[in-house]
Image (cartoon, chains in turn brown, green):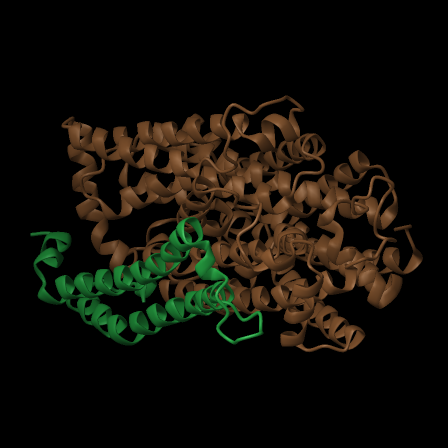
Length: 522
Length: 107
C-alpha cells in the first residue's frame, strides 16, 4: 500500500482534533487530582464510553480481524474472553474501588496495608502489565504508519511514541478521557461504515456472509473449531483463566473508576462500557467474516514470500482499501491510529501514576511531596515510558498484537488481581502474604513468558523454547494465589493483626462510601 | 462505641452486606461458570462446538455459545447495577442516615 494524499489528510485532521483536545485539557490540568483522575468529575456515561475506548485497542481492531482471517472461530473466543472480565469488575470491584481509592488501585491496597512493600509490588505489577500492553499498541502503530506513510517501521514506532508522550504529558486524565471517548465513537462509526460497504460490495447479509466465509476460509470445514490460537488444553485453560482474572487487574481500566464522582456513576460506567464493547464485538465479528470473503484468493495483498503485506494484522486495512479506495483506507487507518493513541494514553498515564504517585511520592518521598512536584514527576515519567515503549515496539515487530495484549492480561492476572481481591474480600489476608504471593506471580509469569515460544523464538530469535505453551497464566495465577493463602494463614505477626483490624475499619467505607470526602457533582 | 463498631451490629448494615455479597457472587459465579464450561468443552469435546443447530447452516453450538456469552456479559453487568441501585441504594441511605454517614459517595 503506497502512501496517498487522502490517507494523510484524514490522518492530519484527526491528529489536529486530538491536539486541540489535548491543548484544551492541558489548560485545565494543574493538580495531581486533575492529572490522574480528572478531578473525579467524569459522568457515568462519559466514563463508560472512555472505558470502551480504553478497552477496544488496536489489538481488538487489527488483531481480532487478523485472527478471524487466519483461524476463524478463535477470533470469536478472543472477543468473548476479552470482555468476560467486565461483569466481574462490576460485581466485585467497581463500587469498592471508587469508595476506597484516590487515583490508582495501589491506593486501595495501601488503605488496608501500610507497608511500603505493597506499594512497590503493586506499582511494579502496574508497570510490567502496562509496558506489555504498550508493546502491542506500538507494534500495531508501527505497522500502521509504515503502511500509511511508507516510512520505515522504527521511525513509525518512534512517531507513535512521540505523539502519545505529547498528549499525555500535556493533557493528563482529562485529555485521555476526551481522546478515549472520541475514539470510541469514531471506532463504532467506522466499523458500521466498513460493514455496510462490505455487505453492499459483496451483496450479502450477515447470515449469508457466515455461509460464504465457511466456503472460502483457509481452514475449510474446521473454520468454526478452535484453531492455532489456542492449540492445546493448557493454552485453552490458561486463556480462560487469564480472561476471567486478568481484566480485573488491568491498571489503566481500574484507574478509570477513580474519575467518577460516586459509586452509582461507577456502576453506570461499567454498564455502558460493557454494552458498547459487546455491540462492537458482534459487529467486528460480522465484519471479520466479510473480510475473509473479500480477501479470499486476492493476490494483490500478498508480498513476494506469499504472506500478507504488512502481516495479517493489516487484513482490515487491505479490505478497507479494496472496497472504499484510498479515502476509506485513510479513514480506517486514522481511526486505528486514534484507537491505539487512546489506549496508549491510558496505559502511559497508569504507568506514570505508578512511577510518580505510587513509587516516587508514596514510597521514596513517603507522601511528603507537593502537588506540583508530583505532577512534574508524572510528566517526566511519561517521557521515559515513551522511550521504553518505542524500544520494545521495535524489538517485538511482527508479533500478533492480539497475543501481545493477552500477555499484559497474564501479568495483571498474576500480580494485581490476587492482591486486590485478597485485600478487599479476605479478612485473613496479610501484607506479607500479598507481597510474597505477588512477587511469585510476577516472577513466574515473566520468566515463563520469556521462555515461551512467542518471546524465546519470536522476539529473541532463539530455538526450542523451554516453556512449550503460549500462555503461562495457568501456572502463575494459582501459584500467586496459593502463596498468598498459605503465607497469610501462617502469619501471626502484629502487622498481620493490624491488617485484619484495618479490614474491619474499611468495611463501612467500602460499602457506604467515604465519610469525609467532599462530593463533586457536575 | 465508635461508628464502625455500631455499624457492624446494625441489622440493616448486616443485611446490606449480605445482599451485596449475594448479588455479586451469584452473578459473577454464573458468568464464570458459563465461560469455564465453554473452555472445558473446547478442551475436551471440541466436536460439540461443531454441531450445527440449523441443518445445512453454519449456525453452530460454538458460535451460539460465544454470542450468548457476549450478550450475557452485558446482561449480568446491567442486572447487578439494577439490583444495586434499586434494592441496595435505599438500604444504604437508611444506614447512612442512622449513623450520620452523610457523604453519599457510595450511593
